[in-house]
Structure formats: C-alpha cells, structure tokens
Image (tube, rainbow, N blue to C red):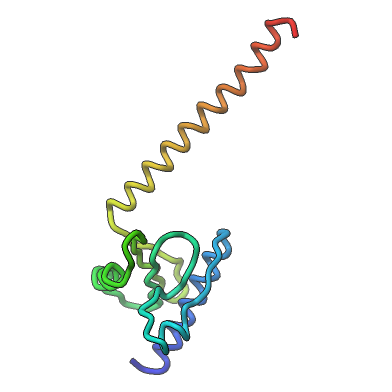
Length: 132
C-alpha cells in the first residue's frame, strides 16, 4: 500500500471519528496502537458497542470489507463498514439481521413514545372532568 493510500485511510478514520463525535459518541482513532502494536483493533474505537471498519476509497469491494470487519470483531460487537468516496456522504454497510434488529428497536421505541404521549394528553382531560 502506498504512503498516499495510507494517509487517505488515516484521513477517513479521522473523518469517521469526527462524525461519531458529532452524534454524541466518544470516539478516537486507533491509529498507533492498531498499526504498531498489532492489536488488531477497530479502525476507530468508540462507545457505540459496534465494530467499525472504515474505508475511504474511490472503489470498494463492500463484501470483502465487511468480511474483514466480521473476522476482526470480538464476540458481542456487531461489525459494520463505514465507507465514503471523495466529495460524497458516508454510507454504512451492516448485516441485514443487524439492520432489522435496529429497525425493530426504533419502531418499538417510537410506538412507546406515541402511547406515552397519548397518555399525557388524556391526563389533563381527566383532571378537568374530576373538578380538581
């Protein structure tokens, strides 16, 4: 791998770290530990509970990148690939089962919020009718 490619990879890792921080996650680039100590760690370490593989390339074999993340991730940390090309937004690739699990959790949380909101709206009406 050329020095320019390594530098672009580092830049991508910093960009992804910054994106995670923007959304409230604690994140840092693994950098030195990963490259020099042979830790086999994630490209970016964060408190999300997930295992990121970060790619900043113009052409990507998504399946190969995902398999790289899946092989490296520890048990209990689902892998994903965060990837982008120059001047384009980030995309994230993850296993379909993981996506559907997230979707189910969001749907259930949304439903609970709607039900809680309905309960709060009903409470003032009850107070008005009880004479309090």
